[in-house]
Image 1: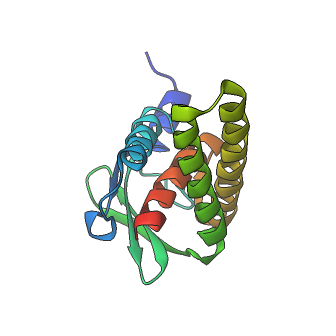
Image 2 (image 1 turned 45 degrees about the horizontal axis):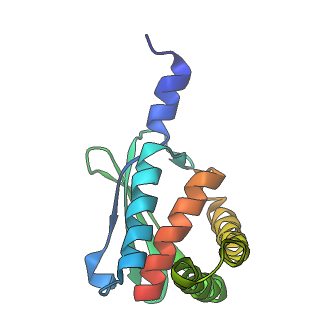
Length: 164
């Protein structure tokens, strides 16, 4: 038997995420792995609720358009709910630094000591958290998300931004 909280939680979540293939170039294996893990983890557990709408669950398509990130949110049946356009300008430095740290991390895994890998990973996680906080702030009047959802969405934004 489910209670009201389970039903509310089921309405305030994503059940599908797609990235516009037109705005993504060919990615290396590490980037593809990050993308796949983020989507899998996001679909397993997330909080996603467009403010003023309680008809979820939701489907999300992320695209880039004219240097803007488009959150195309639809109902489970595909009915359009809202499309939010966010400028990518505030994310540029964080995404660039994040990918540099990711490249260093993946290289370190192959050649460095555990303490060096850990130091790079701490920096990488810090940048990831910074990007997640920025995303949460940019969406605060548009879409309610929790920190774990913001982290996974930031990963997807990074992939789109880096490739776009």
